[in-house]
Length: 388
Image (cartoon, rainbow, N blue to C red; front, side, top):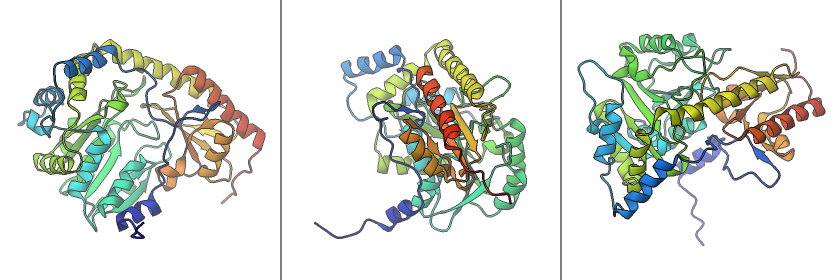
């Protein structure tokens, strides 16, 4: 057996990453940790994959994705003056994870600084570290929207900014005026914006989703990352895609074909079928998430020592607790009470003192898990943090 250590980038990841290796909930436990729809994939999508297999679509596809799928995706992008989206503007990827990896590895190298407003999805920072770049965390404002003054101080000289909208883990929907303000801050710079809009169909009443591609001052510098996973309950199918400035798209396509090759052909036929689903199929799932969101807000409101900013989109609640304990310790203690959640520190320094709860779980599991959380904080009588 060799004693040769792994590459130094793996050492960097092990030192910096807080992302847990997730596993199914043990017997008797409920999981509010997974960002995965609990709905089955809609039957027409499954049937399209089966039909593709029966028809012999079992070989390599175009490495950028099936032309028909890319053309269908291009036709659904927001219109833009002076440019018509085409299939050549799209790269179909191994889920949004591979789309994010492709653009970061294509555009970031040693010494490049990447601004990440945080708390943020932990994959972003891990990818920057893997590419050899430097993560520049910028804390959010108290309402969990962007602190524009802090961004104004951090963005000069940066190579890239990455964010999700709606946000994982906070459930915030960044408003049109926030996006326009970001465009103003970036005017005259060459900062690349990566907008992960995986939860774009999950926005709750009173809030409006605006894509970065719809903002004139952002559209020419934005890489748009999307996935079929959340909207269509297709996490295991691993179909994502990206678009943006052509030079960036071409570079990301080169990375993706080097790391991943072509995507599963039958899964791409399934994705085409998903695009043809009636709006009511997605709307029904979104309505269920809305009802669960109301349940989360109702169950956690008024609980001493716990505070929740009501989610505006996605299917996460970012729960703040007053106990003077690290979030990883609290998450482990809750696991012992048979409810799994994610520690807030996973999502950046400002995530400490928080837990992320996913309500992409059945109502029964959600009620059970929330009751165990509330009981835990009531039973433990956690010490309050020191006054500063």
